[in-house]
Length: 333
Image (cartoon, rainbow, N blue to C red):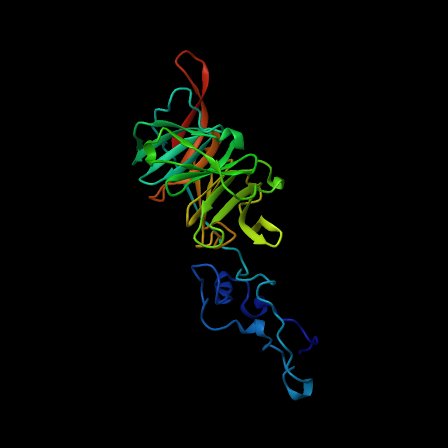
């Protein structure tokens, strides 16, 4: 109570809007790393203890705190985390593609190896050492065309997981990175919701729940889906989502057991940390990697090498000695 009667207090009334004040308003739980005073005592304002005299006998019994932690924003702080943005020059990796090979997707595997794949399942393994590439080895994924064209893939334990344009997910076992072909089979899981259309997507295996998570991008939003089983059977449901800037358009999604990578049309790569259950530690990216002169190329895909480096796939028009322009695919790191 005061000269203007009873007033509701906001956190900013007590601590202001300064960033360092915002850090003092941190929950005791939430994504790592906990900021400022996070973890130092309970958040008392949400428990109804700031009552301005209402807990005195004159004003009746102390009111009950009805603040609900989850429905009012959960672990989110007052201001969004500002991601670390790194702008740098990307370097083309010299690679000799198989004849007539024009890849559309890339995924990174063990031992700094990249698998490039076309929409129809023709691929090439490319070993990477520093900023150089070894000889590429062609391979093919049989049985994939019947399920649809490739819209995204990931490299799991001795196999590729492929999400197709029909919404079906296929498993393509590989015997090392020298296999010349693999026979793909559809996983016994429901197709992805048709509402996503043929949007960029990827699937990864996790150690909890159904063991499978799918990430699907629509515009500047990436939905994280989990397989839910109830009395009506199994179906996909959203377990969370992450966001890029509103003007961004996601062209590819990749993931490992602990990282999510979304590539935008301008070549920028947005990174999130993933928990053990495949959900993101925060809605906003923790790191953004922006290539210089990104507008000169058509960015198609990207993946994370075991070393943490980002491998990008792009295409650009190049003029040959005869003067003709040809579309050339290149890997950039």
